Amino acid sequence: AAAAAAARAAADKAREGEEASKEESRREREARERSEAALASTEQRLQDASHRALAAMEASREEARRLTAEREKAEEELRCDGVARLERLQAEHRAEVELLRAALTTEAEQRAEALEQRRRAEVAEAERLAQEWRARGEGLEAGAGG
Image (tube, rainbow, N blue to C red; front, side, top):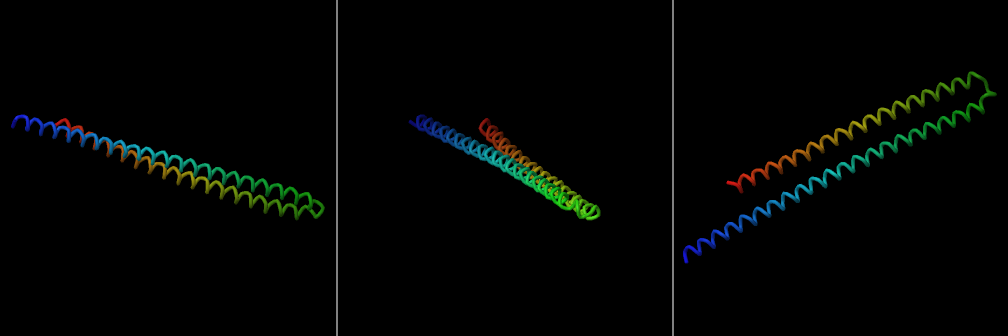
């Protein structure tokens, strides 16, 4: 009877260990799924931000085209007002377009750099989490094996 009770206790203990191992595996899987979902969400946010930056650049290009069209219309109206006045307007327009181009380029570069820095930081965090879970998994395997 004592041997049977000891065998039952050993079987119960083994079953408890197996259940704990299954629970830990489930938690690890859920954490991995959360990490993967967070990474996918981050990637989507980065893509969305990239699309917004491209849309802003396109809007700026449209504004430049509109300014060009206005300039061309003004040129037509001013031809009879004299060459000096026309040259002044052209110079002002060129200066505005150059300022707009410089601002667009700087803004696009800053946004792209910020997006890239954020992407690198989030990938590094995801890799750190994955490594942490791998280490935990190896620790559990070592514990289960020993």
